[in-house]
Length: 386
Image (cartoon, rainbow, N blue to C red; front, side, top):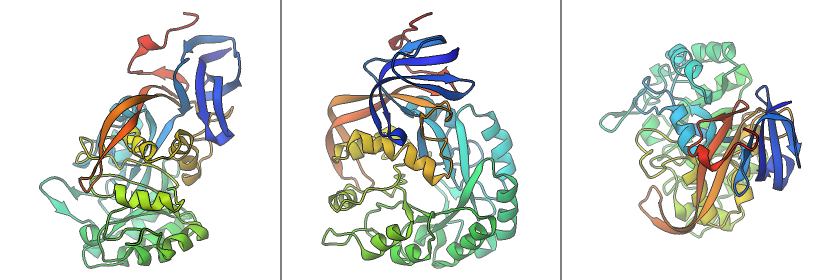
């Protein structure tokens, strides 16, 4: 007997190369059925006419609500954007990780994983009035404690985070990245690196990253854009991808440009993962949320299947947790119910450029840990055997 069956939806699950009408079942917090005409459940929801995907994973968020001034509430974000797993990217460092774990992660219903910042207090000076880059002062780097905390919290910490660039690290160049790479190597975890304005250059950062490491803010505007003025992809970017470096969008307040994205897509360079970098300074624009960021790619010509892939299975692989981002039997019991609306929708990037798109991805509800959880519009999904 299944706990829950979603019946008759268009199921898009790139982990199984599937796009078609199917039923999905959940039991004890896991996917327990994937096929046609599934029967035998305590609860069955009719999702015909809707799209069912694995639970969306946002690879770049800031959800240390109350612990940092940029944190948002992960549960509310799940309700709005259909994100069942928020990956917090460096809000906390080893000095304030215990509070993040005890007061936020352990109380959240939606899943939270984290990259631990190599800086002692994480991203502590990020606000509308105060902007202090935590990597400017190398005295804030705490590699020994970072390695100890990461090793002791492998159930939740998926990697090490560092921010470099003029805003985050001032004149330090690649010095903070060098320290963070040593920590990542020590604990055997991947590293996620933020990049903003030079110094250092995009190329300098890429040359230091290892296979499986992640460059976030990968489709930045100039300066430190991955595209050339001629609209080609910089050779260092192609070389890094061939080497196994991964590229994440991390839209945020200042890190996603339509011009850059058009150039990259025109050259067949799709990011590995689409993420919002949602925080208090961009949740009301220009990033808004995960489904809005996904919609921007849809309106730039990327297929819905590929957009879903970059927000599900690719993210699970980046996390090195293949049970995430999939609806295979035995995978985590998370699913997102979506629609794609037709019309005219105004999208904006971080440079102020507007794009009028004809489609918008909208989250309608979620299954979280195998249960129908806080759907936005429950009446739209009637119980079949209530």
